[in-house]
Image (tube, rainbow, N blue to C red; front, side, top):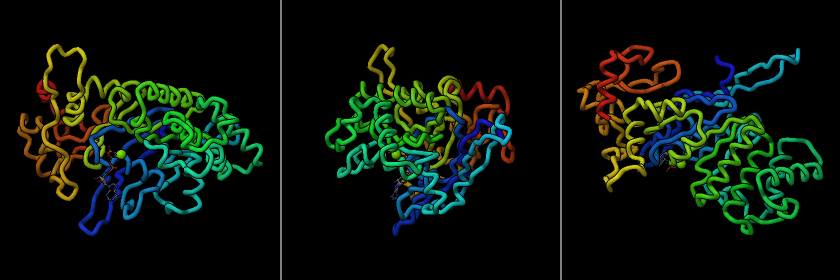
Length: 365
Ligand SMILES: Nc1ncnc2c1ncn2[C@@H]1O[C@H](COP(=O)(O)OP(=O)(O)OP(=O)(O)O)[C@@H](O)[C@H]1O
Ligand SMILES: [Mg+2]
């Protein structure tokens, strides 16, 4: 295991058991987060990004449940000689959502911020008390000491006059300031991983830029990793080190950000990138959107889940896509892809079959 691995989600399945049927919100998702790095998770609405993130902290609302797969967190500690670091694997999926282990872990080692701060801040408590309570839940300190740490944190996230704002209620703050208070609440325990689920979608572009810059600055200062869920590929290009692309509950490609933008492999990733409007286009051309729409969760395609919308399957006359599901396999040392264009049935790596086929598929897009 590489020493810079912080979190690994393997074959995760999180299902909702409804009267009408089972919604397989996350169904076979695999991804890795590197220590101190930013992983962006992208994909069309409903593909399971938020439920995957909530599964890591085991805060999936009922009737949702993790029914399969593994989530491992690699905790670093200093060896007895004080020189080397040791990595201990903690299997989060072995813990029950309300277990003392999970409660000690949640908010301390991994914290989460949400798109809408009002949904997670209590309207009847001051922001100072809410941030402070999170700290006191995990650290045995006096109230005075906790208050000082809170004021320092509120200042760090750019809230002006933090000693006075400590006593403000959420409704007395602007949207941007509330999002800063949420970040303070998430970061007060100095987590190793921050999960940010569309943290800037509800903000204007200037405030969005400030919040992203703040997250990056605190990331360097605290040495934490970030999982950012976003629809905005501009944000991905700006802040991500790695990108995981999700489709219908699975990760179909994970790659470093440069490779993903310059040499995308999965037809779905190529489709997402083609559908971004470009400033340099001369005429008012139509956007090249991915054909069709995300299938209904009760009506999932057989074989590769993307095959009904995949242009490259038709161009390459791949019948296997309709019948057999490909696995997520390494294509080279750094890119993982789940697609029959790159591997034969039964193989354990997705090396391109021939140079020609890769050329052919790229020229189609
Ligand atoms: N409480 C719930 N009960 C039933 N189904 C749910 C529930 N929450 C989510 N789902 C379903 O799980 C699937 C994944 O939802 P999720 O919220 O993770 O999508 P997402 O990728 O975050 O989408 P968005 O980009 O719109 O936020 C969707 O089909 C959704 O309808
Ligand atoms: Mg979501």
